[in-house]
Amino acid sequence: VQLVESGGGLVQPGGSLRLSCVASGIIFSDYTSYWYRQPPGKEREFVASITSGGSTHYPDSVKGRFTISRDNVKNMVSLQMSSLKPEDTAVYYCNPAGVYWGQGTQVTVSS
Image 1: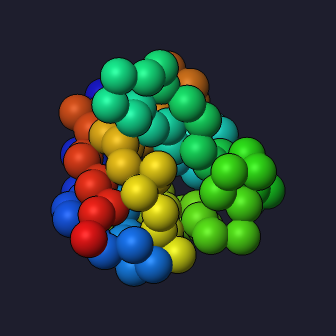
Image 2: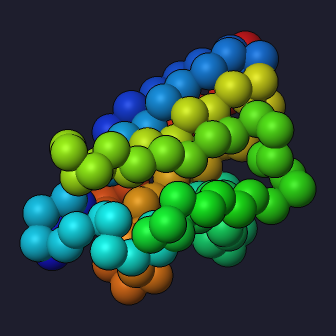
């Protein structure tokens, strides 16, 4: 299984970013897929999930600001992030089936 995450970068507080994760060797729609993040000096934490049926779940810290989605044609999972805060700064990881990990993409929220 190979995962390629993209879309990270530097953004000002209040800004938006869209992360994408493209996979080979696994079909996203067959499993629950997750996004996690690891802030500097902290442990990895759950950010969003989407089940094979399309149900989504978010922790309170990002609820209403982040949206996970899946494109079954492109075999891609995305994370739309809005109203970004400095505390959203982290390396973001795609995690299909709760098993496989990508290389991560850095998101930095700073003025």
